[in-house]
Amino acid sequence: MSEHYDDLETRSPAVREADLFAKLRPMLEAALKTPGYSAHLKGVDPAAITDRKALAKLPILRKAEMPALQKAALPFGGFVGAPLGSFGRLFTSPGPIFEPEGTGIDPWGAARGLYAAGFRRGDVVLNTFSYHLTPGGFIMDSAARALGCAVIPAGPGNTEQQMEVISAYKPQCYAGTPDFLKILIEAAEVRGVDISCIKRAVVSGAAFPPSLQDWVKARGIDAYQLYATADFGVIAYETSARDGMVLNETMIVEIVRPGTGDPVAEGEVGEIVVTNLDPYHPQIRLAVGDLTAVLPGASASGRSNARIKGWMGRADQTAKIKGMFVRPEQVAEIARRHAEIAKLRLVVGRANEVDTMTLKAEIYAEPIGFVDAVSSTLQQVTKLKGAVEILPLGALPNDGKVIADERPIG
Image 1 (tube, rainbow, N blue to C red):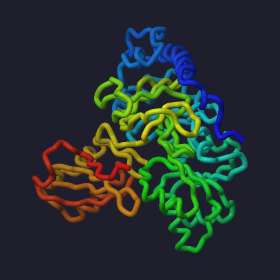
Image 2 (cartoon, rainbow, N blue to C red; image 1 turned 45 degrees about the horizontal axis):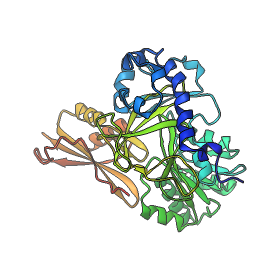
Image 3 (cartoon, rainbow, N blue to C red; image 1 turned 90 degrees about the horizontal axis):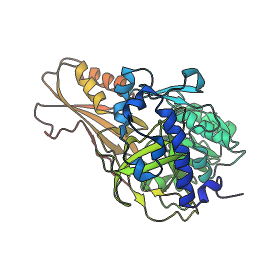
Image 4 (cartoon, one colour; image 1 turned 90 degrees about the vertical axis):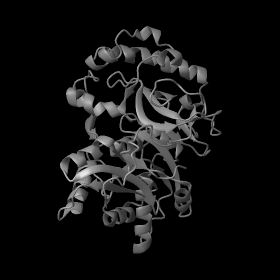
């Protein structure tokens, strides 16, 4: 059986570039028929965008702008021309950002990443990504089934039931966040449940530092990272060479200087900008807000596409916590709901290989039940639980930070 998913992974870079930009023209033509892109790309000639230099001249569209743009013209801000009924599924992710799913096999391009992680036809996959409104569960579900795997649509949480289904179905593969994989392993150890059937894993949506990688490997699970977003699906994936993350074959990825649309030199850290090749859901130079750097040379796995280091932080103050994006405007919403708050800062950390968050609040007064009320609002707005710490006026630094991500990188 081939180590590679298909021949696209081993074609020459020149052939790849020619193919990508040949497919880009009809996608641009379709995009310009939408009111959103006709305004955003006014005056652009699709026939002139034949290489990366020409593409780099097009304006950036930032993911952080999408909630406001979509709210002004629901549901997609005028950037999608296809009728809603032509899509397979319709999602909303935190922000909120509304996203459609195509109707084809593996519409998120994730099967390639699962294949690189060793998932094969006939495997049983425990999929613990959420199936509720967000696309994560379906990204992995459709990819696994495209490979010929059976999928247990477990979703996150409910460890007792997870133990039951693992014991019954004995899945060989896991898909989910690295944090939840650790939770499952520890739950099994405490309960004396044998989950040694799980040999392979793909993890995404949260940090997977070397310490946790070693911890998981010591328990007999070969885990691989995917870099994926709810906008595009899998953008890059880890291979058995363990030498960075190889870019997917279904999109054009640029690394630009944060705050600009200018590509950076190889090896320089910059913001990830993606252009897909889907005429039904065109996304042109969408800056996703994540930082990375391109690695020199090709992967030892034999795949010829460029490699990135993986997630290296955020270009803005948006943070991904336990697989969910939390944005500065959400922190501002918490302050708006409580008149006693003078200033807020959400501090993101990591303890025992799990993401943590603490909302630090300077307040004018502390009525009875205030901390519980703010904790409840924090969970309502972000969909995540966190601690609340009360501070006197003037205690927070005057540096403009709303979200401080203090998790170690790497």
